[in-house]
Image (cartoon, rainbow, N blue to C red; front, side, top):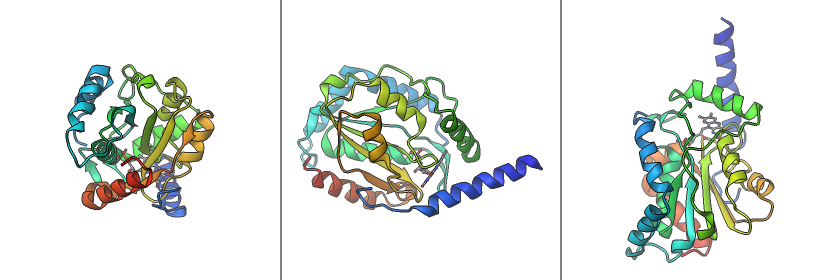
Length: 241
Ligand SMILES: Cc1cc2nc3c(=O)[nH]c(=O)nc-3n(C[C@H](O)[C@H](O)[C@H](O)COP(=O)(O)O)c2cc1C
């Protein structure tokens, strides 16, 4: 009975958080096993592979000329997600790939060293809350990209309990982001950017944080064309095209 009450309370809290501060403005939106995704991450983690992707993208004229000084770093989950059911590709992953496609940037997915995040929504919220309460720094799988290659870093994640997932703080504190242009983006179900920009500025004090973008997670699954045009417009506004 106690457990039922605590699960219901958690749902109520989350619904409250989502409804409380909704904004998709640019300033302030599985079933696939994670092991499969991990393979692709270790590919992305290699400097050579990143360069290959960047070069391959450079030939497409629909992309910007931002190119090889830019990288997109993101964290995203498949499995059961809020309001979209079980998804094969994470909402933030969808946006991250659109950014990389548009800019010709390299791309790197942050994965936990061990895949301990649940694939069921309620259990995931519990683990995420515990990490937040403990101010945890979950270990990242694979070596980080060589950041000296990049002057501009798009950084994206789902909003978790009104904040970056704690594993993103591991990234902020272990990658050398000094002096770089950092561009945050979120996916969410009501909280918008949820202070990702100011929290990033506070975590990396000697970087320039540019205007971020928030995208509804459900739009990533159900309105890819709409999300794409929003992403492209935002990138144009950043002067990267
Ligand atoms: C642990 C957890 C906490 C969440 N907290 C919030 C929140 O505070 N505000 C919000 O708008 N959405 C919240 N969401 C919804 C996610 O931000 C949204 O579904 C996101 O698009 C998931 O992205 P992903 O598929 O890339 O992981 C939460 C989801 C999870 C799993």
